[in-house]
Length: 90
Image (tube, rainbow, N blue to C red; front, side):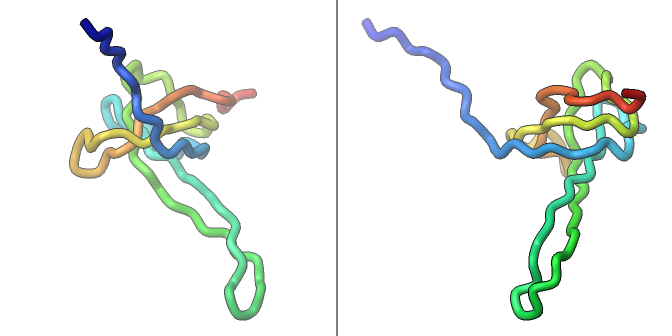
C-alpha cells in the first residue's frame, strides 16, 4: 500500500497593511510596490487592494499582515490570512 500524504500547494505570499475589517471574517489589505517607469525611469508607488479571509477575526485596521493565495472563497476573496506581523498599536 502507498502512504498518501496531503501536500499543501504554496501560493503567492504578499505582505500588506489592513485598511478595512468591516466584513465578517473578511479584511481588505493594501499591498504597495515600487516600480520604475519604463521610459523615463521615475520611481512610482503602485498599490493594490486585496480581500482576504480572516477566520478568527483577529485583525484590526493598521495591522501589518502576511496573506497567501488560495482557492476562490467568494466573488472577491482569493487570499487568506497567514499571520499578523505587526499590530497597529506597536
